Length: 125
Image 1 (cartoon, helix red, strand yellow):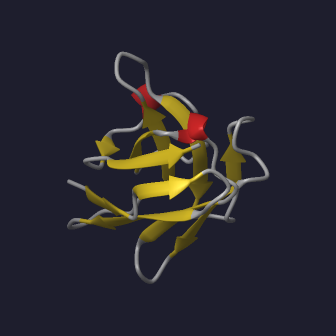
Image 2 (spheres, helix red, strand yellow; image 1 turned 180 degrees about the horizontal axis):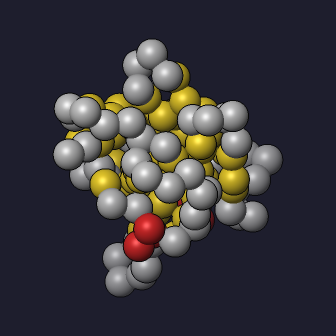
């Protein structure tokens, strides 16, 4: 079993920055891909970014490319999402997700078996 713990959400003005963290823990596991999704009430999970430990490959949603950066710290088993130049439309609950068997940088939330509890990001105009 894998547990994911997120932190770093909050309230920020448009144009500001936040960094989200997601730390993975659990016995006898190794995550292959860590990703971030976001959700607003009544809406589906939207893919934000994904990071593959092997090779450090990344993938981004068009809406955040050039503003957000996903990375990982192997020693800390932690994924980071650096969010710059935030916009009001970035407001959402952000969820960390992970998969342990497949290394595909999937944008489909159904392909991630492990999820964090979510952290809220609010961007004021």
